[in-house]
Length: 198
Image (cartoon, rainbow, N blue to C red):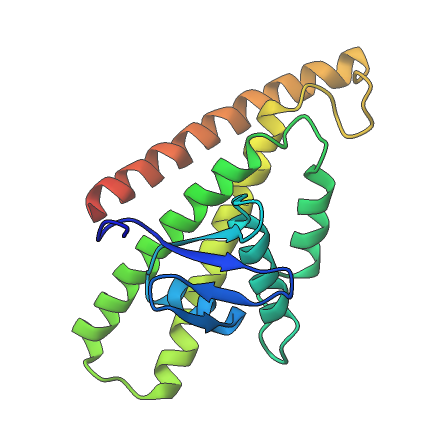
């Protein structure tokens, strides 16, 4: 029997059925999505081989949610950008960047909810729908700027893949120095914000 803090093991059978060993019941992808929302840890194993297939199942849950009407959270430009990074030299830093961005976003979201509750108590739904959307758009814009600046910093050549002409390279060197300084300031600001939340 697993320890209390160990993740629940979900076994996936050849007939695609999922079995929760913690509750001794069959579950669906929707049930697993609800477990994620409740913060319950689980791992998914192939029932025959014992291979950990958690990543594939979580990706499948996202695919199912994205196909529901009105559930799209991943915009097409983001998906295109993500696909473009597969096989790219930057592929190895994308997962940690996305993970850190989601952690920062979750902290920001929680802080924002607390501020809304303390400022307005139980605010009308109209207020709750409008204000968080603007905050979300601003957070997304900042994350994309930071990501683009990070990509520029790590990319040796411009998009074409060949070195820029000499005069242009000098101008870009100045721009890169400015971009690098701006990126350092943004990272320092984010670190201060994260420290103040902790």
